[in-house]
Image (cartoon, rainbow, N blue to C red; front, top):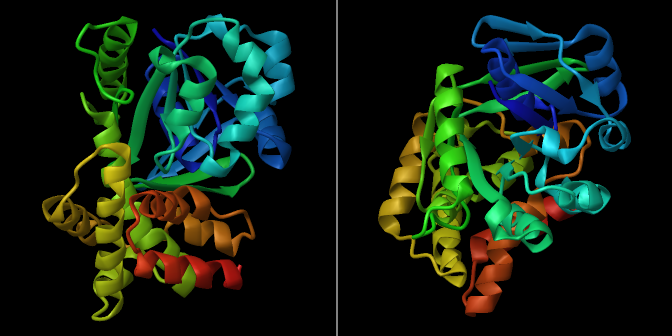
Length: 313
């Protein structure tokens, strides 16, 4: 049995938490506001592909977390927050996180979360991860909805060490536990590469989806907008070189085909825009633009869509 802390009990964190709790693992959630109050009063309810997963889990805010728990109480700390909140949460929990050596697994959009965690805690405590082919969001306080295959890819960040360390054994343990809990999970020895491949998808569809109000299937099957999606994906692949990674046309074609074959879903950025929440634009398009600037290359599609979305928001 594992003991996990899930920082962020939204659509993604809530779904995975429910699966793990159902399998007998101890899971503590963090949340805030009305969502936290509902979790404490009624428990967590997850709607997933026609199923309902209900569980009563400890749910706390960050102040209570630091008062009632030690970071060493957990086998792993999972961060499933929006990337816009990563730095603020790390600042808030800094002393608490530094009081032990427990590894931190990021399940977030973008390629900048792991560097922030590593800067605070050191690379040896960082696990990179991505949630693949899953859509999820809070539909009302205490209730989340998720859909898709809901896979996880994880690994030592930025890549597996030649000399295995404690993270190697933990990743294997987590993989076994997650698979047994009904979460398809694979381990990557090059998680930095996998994070960039997901960014290829995210930058391809998230900003345009938020700008147009269209779901992923409508975008990838549209005769003109699909070219824009592909163009932004290609710009993302080129930007990866700034992080020492080589992504090419093959990666872009694979990612385009993957998102094209996925369910017609609202992207997380579109949901955030509709609900008036901050957009992960800087973590997605911004990450591509910053690295393009470092490389001295143009990213006209991403530049234009980013500017239009900022004006519209």
